[in-house]
Image (cartoon, rainbow, N blue to C red):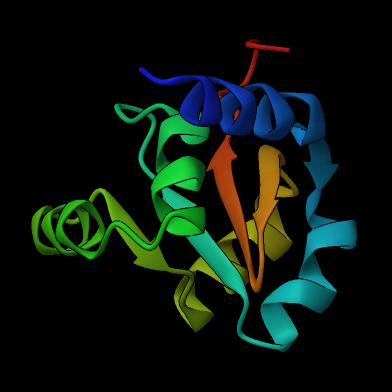
Length: 103
C-alpha cells in the first residue's frame, strides 16, 4: 500500500463513527445510504468509493455485499432502531449495522 492509500485509509478511519437510525434517516431520505456487508472492511470499501475503483464496487454490488439501502431496510431499521458504523465517502454514507451486543 502506498503512502497516499495509507493516508486515505487513516483519514477515513478517523472519520468513522457510530450513528443511530434517527440520525441516518435524513441521509436515507436523500438516497445516500449504502449498506456494506459485515464481511467487508468498511474502511476499505470507503477507500474504493473515494478512489472510484469501479471494478471492486461492481464486484461487491454483484455479490450483494454492497447495496443502496432500500425502503424495506428503512422500515426494518425504523422498527429495530439499530446503531451503525458509518463513514462518509461523498456523496454516500456507507453503513454497517452493528450486531446487538457488539458495542
